[in-house]
Image (cartoon, rainbow, N blue to C red; front, top):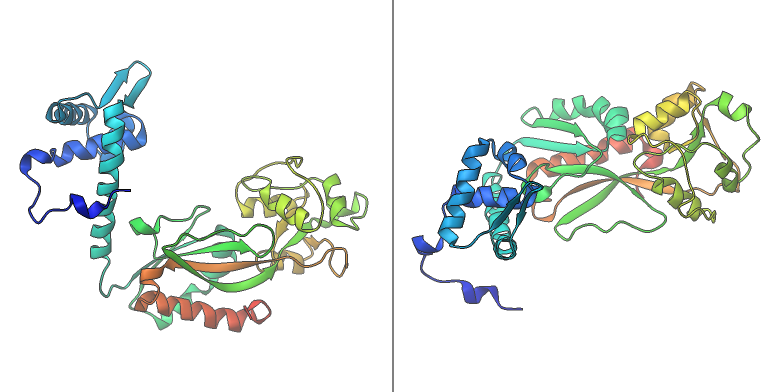
Length: 324
């Protein structure tokens, strides 16, 4: 691979070597989003204005960069080569600029969080964080997706990482710390269970309606950890969010995998029953709520304060689930 430094110069690029920046942004947006209309919406520009920018960069380049047809737009071979290079440069400019804007001392804290934890625990305790850190502008966003940390979509993210099966690999620029470790348990409505044969082993669950979020992978991994083969054989409704699957289980629609933090109030009220409790055929499988942030921002004061508050509050409120 060629050394990137060989392309560096002590002199700034000549005016002739750089395209008009608005035209370059338009070309990049069309290439990434796959269409002029989508790019225009993203850049908040008129369709005609964007088309004019595209003609401008092609005139500057002297070669066609985009193929236009009734089926839509696509990059020419030259366009693909050019975009491969300039997209990396634009990303570098964007990330460096955002790092600059977020550098130094700032008191805005944008937290993304898996919806179940956000709804059932974090949102109920944030007032104490606010009371002791009144100078922090705290924003909590429940999301099933992880943020783009390089674009500063979030300062920290709270996710679930299972402690069984194949482990997820964290990106090199990120760091994580466990906040709480909880058992993963199957639960169902009492009436649902009473109407069916007793579940004595994990394998018996295959005879029941299993409720899923985005895919069947959560159940597959849990069942495999109990030596129950089920590759690509699981069926059942997909509800996309944990709150919806839990609600479906409460109303007798099937069995869901959850944890005591999310389901405790329903279990205490008798709305849900833990399947396999005190049964040696159901050995405990755990997952951790983890806080994720960028390595290079890990010890920023506002992030450190939030992390320490999380640890203190969980030790106080959830001593059974505090990481060892």
